[in-house]
Image (cartoon, rainbow, N blue to C red; front, side, top):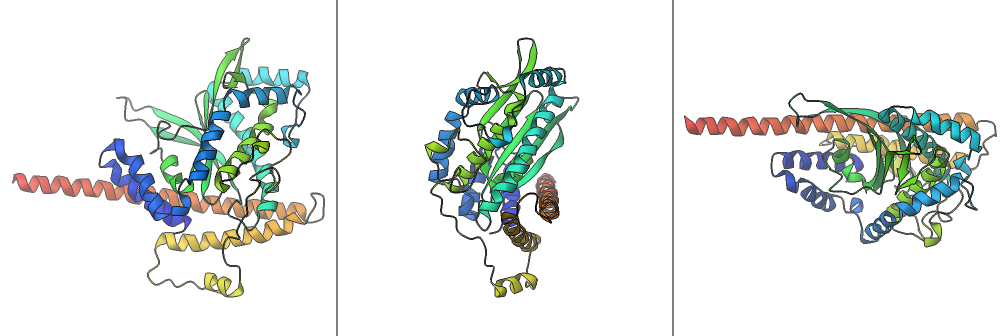
Amino acid sequence: MGRFGDLWASGKIIKREQAEQAARRVEDAVSAMEDLSPASALSGASAQILAALQSRRGQETGRWLKGMALGENTAPAPSSKVEPKSVADKRAIDMSNLPAFQATTAFIDALFKEFTELSYEFNKTAVGTELMLSCENARLREKKSDDVWYKPVVKSYLGRLTTRDFSLFVKGLDGKILITILPASLVLAYTMEEIDEKDYPPLMELTRTSVDGLQVFTLGGEVTPWEAIGALAKELLGDLVRVSSGVMSEAELFSGGAPKLGETAAVGFEGKTVGDTSSEAVARQHAPNLDGMDVFDACDVVDGLIERELKKLYQQASSMNAGKEGASELRMQISAMEKFRTKLLDAFEEYTHTVHSGAAVGAQQDAAGSGANLLV
């Protein structure tokens, strides 16, 4: 089943569970999704790597990032852009003066700026494999809480970095940033907040804390300086690739340089080409059989075409230097294609949520009507 088929199925499962016992909804959803899409399940190798990373992404990562910002580490990432101490101090003071949620969004925006650059370079080496990355910048989400009588609006700031089978979510709250890796089939469940952090503990959690009179973000009790965001982005992108491939080398952890498939990320991974790019397959994609095709099947066809075009563009980009004529135009084409794909996915998620919410309400009304008839 394709990506949109997985989303559709997960929507059905989640909404059905809401009408049943809430305590079992996530366990049942995950089990069902593994049956529907085995490729999206958390494999034994991926689960072991994720567990290992979770144990390393606390205080140890915090100390490494702090040392990176202070210039104590010997292999700084090229994207970390370490600033002079005076500039860094001024930035720290400016960030400290921001309200908690505004500081959270600023930190996440800076993180996704790094993700965008890193994923572009990484995709040049991953083109044609299931590890190609899609970066979706964070956006504001608001949800009305029904737990309190005056129904306050809870704000979150959510973005994601996605491979074919896994997604890394960055979720900003009021003075807190949660970073989680989940099977891609649970994208809808997470974005619609059907999955609680208790069900899937985050890979790491940054908290805004007062240190020496300044409001700063800390990881594992260690201050995470603004100038270390580039290094943090590099490590997180590498984490997603390691989990997605099921391969991790200890030498990869806290390594310098931008992630590169087979060299500094997922060493030992043998990527297989995704999709048939033969002329016959392309012809089939251009002339699909619409008889009996569902909405999610049609979206999967479009998604496949977008992925094919992205592969072509990244193959061209891999042979170009940044300053070469046409390189900037090619980068703009890739960005536009990625945005198109994101908008398609967002629209489908909203459609799925609306349809299944309506179905759940209709089922409840039918049940209530049947009960009323029995009383009569």
